[in-house]
Image 1 (cartoon, rainbow, N blue to C red):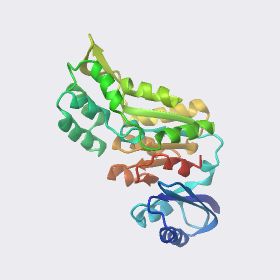
Image 2 (image 1 turned 30 degrees about the horizontal axis):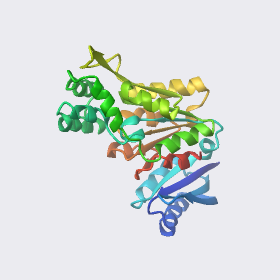
Image 3 (image 1 turned 135 degrees about the horizontal axis):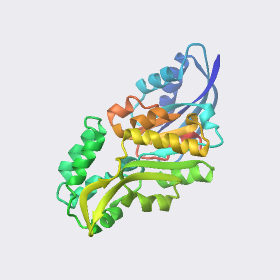
Image 4 (image 1 turned 45 degrees about the vertical axis):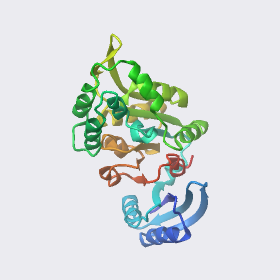
Length: 295
């Protein structure tokens, strides 16, 4: 039985030597190169090798081998050709430290003089050491009494990750579906979603009463189970099979979503996430996902 895969290498240090190393590892795993192409820009290089794989070689093994052989500044994603050639795909992303560069809860906590305290809790939660919902309630509690105008101030501080707008625009132009699901807050995400023209988005809702934050969130928390749930719901609503979905995230809260998607991409992620993701991006350019997905 022969399978068709693509090995997409990308990085700021992509060189002939690094590519030779990748191709040697793939050949050792039973893959033969059927085609090659180069791309990228002045930020990072891209090399795509079409692979014919026969015998006992399997996708998980090949991904593990290229990850173990990775050189600093170069990553390789091994992707089924069926996903890359799908006529419609769904891209779903985390927001904080993925679509945007910041952790919004930390920006809000700074206005309460609690940034370092909250950042330590966020870091532990993203490493998977704390229950996300419980940690979110604890972090939001320190915001009680802040004027609602703080939310507007924080919104002005938020910056998209490099390549984020270009990534969304490319997927939308090609007729694909783009969604984001966030453990952050609707009050911040809403305007960003509108500006980018996202098809689906959801986050937590900060409670505001009499012009002030109460230190509570309304409704069920968007946690790791919810992220997977919305991936499945939105893909089904669009008639897109899970095998044609791409999920991107950085923390433990994203693990279920990354596992359920056709390919789960760890973007500048915590070690526990990098260890289990299908592909990793260790440079700051989110639009590397375009090359993985062939968009």
